[in-house]
Amino acid sequence: MNKDVIIALDFPGKAETLDFLGQFTGRKPFVKIGMELYYAEGPEIVRAIKTRGHRIFLDLKLHDIPNTVKRAMAVLSRLDVDMVNVHAAGASAMMRGALEGLTRPDGTRPLLIAVTQLTSTDQAALQKELLIDVPMEETVLRYAKNAAESGLDGVVCSPLEAQGVKARCGASFLTVTPGIRFADGDAGDQKRVMTPERAGQGGSDYIVVGRPITQAADPAAAYARCLREFLGA
Image 1 (tube, rainbow, N blue to C red):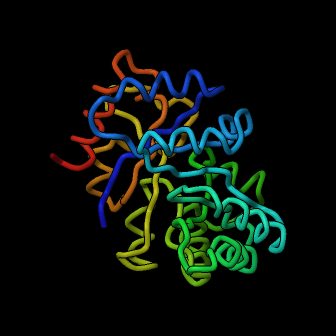
Image 2: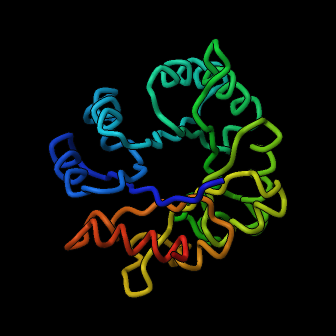
């Protein structure tokens, strides 16, 4: 299993996105297309980035009844992306439907992962707003176990929970972890964060990094730093 850094392309449109990617003249970063960019540009932005040689995590966090998610995933499977996701809160039937819809007639498919709890959610919000009374870590581990039993490849979780997910679901079960900040950076709106170095030591397979790279004075240098710290190279 190859660990990697995924850059979150949190830009409002195609022009800004392609200008940003043009700064990377060597290694082509693995990138994440989220809701803002996808809703602005549609499938064409996926095709435009893919033709430039990037691996793509399409981060749309599907969460609906099983049949709707299954049919939506069948559409997304036609795009040449490498990873897609759903919300684990949709429960096992929805996740199984997503897997079925995503799998192409020849048996191939992108990686499918499930969001456990957003890294902007803390224990207070979990209890007072979502009415979940068990600790955050146990909630994440239960959602991860549901995803594993539904046949998914991994989960999105905080880097603080990655080791626990591995212990509960197995070493090959992927952990994709946002909430990454450099030691000298600002946490912003993230509540459960970790540095790239600690995430690399703590069980994360992929780290998702947005503003520390996209808003850096030199994004290519920030990306190189993130790779060094995460991979220990």
